[in-house]
Length: 129
Image (tube, rainbow, N blue to C red; front, side):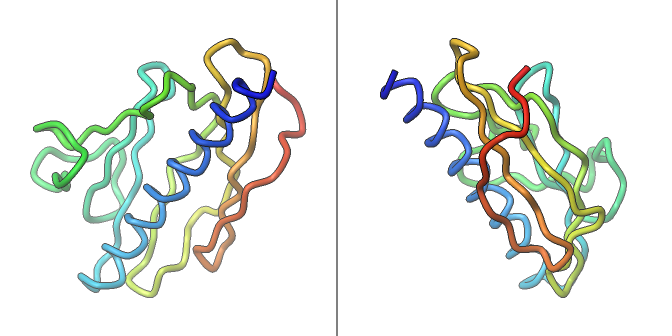
């Protein structure tokens, strides 16, 4: 249905904004920032450096995070596929990869493809588990 498709679209856009925030933190602070994903608990957080899981002392906390730096997608959509991505001080992503978001009723998915340059784009999912 339209509302389920909008749920998926909203979730992947929210994830894209979060990854762009991690990239901007890396650029403005002139240090690497990693994105740690927990697909089973549907949440993510940022930390300085390249180690994931994030060391406690390196976790970034700010608007939208809890005390441990975690943020969850707002609309019950799920992150079902996601590599651990690190953004360099120049904004490049290593490794590049694909993150997949699925709506709460498990009827649609969208992919967020992160390029080596650090940019990202939303595409139709190759398969929806």
